[in-house]
Length: 204
Image 1 (cartoon, rainbow, N blue to C red):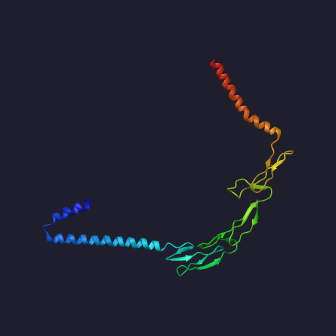
Image 2 (spheres, rainbow, N blue to C red):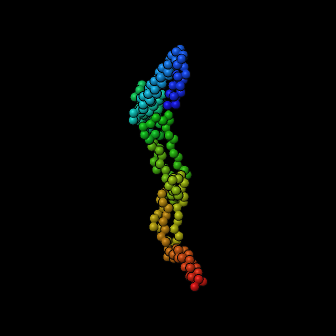
Image 3 (tube, rainbow, N blue to C red):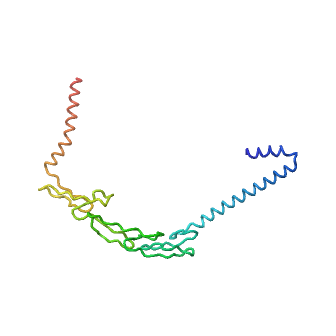
């Protein structure tokens, strides 16, 4: 709105000069044409971007949409014809790819630590599976590489649950341990009640 007011003022100032008025009109026409061209370019750009949205099961390589390589393989060379598959190669030993992909190389297989044992070996389509060796368990399931030795129950105390790769041994509580546990709970409560009684006696 301010631009049109300024333009109107300029036209009013130059109305006595026909040549200047024609020059201003020409500039306005050129400006209008420029804006139209810019709008067309933006629309064409959006259409171009949309045209490069590849279909499901495809990936974009330069200006082409190529089909993904299957699981157990990787992309050695992308396609040269749209919507076709490039050259796929099988994952070399010690690497894998679980699903259809556009990887430039396969994923290296995991390695079992010295506290672990292998449950399933690595293949072209799956990673190596490891678990804690017998006598060890995962201290933290979020950190499967860290295995701890299993707990041994005290002599005469049976195990409710034997140790396994995902859980430590669970020992049955003895009568003395149950008594100790109750004492640890009731002792603070007894002290707190004693302090309250003392305070009430002092106030009375």
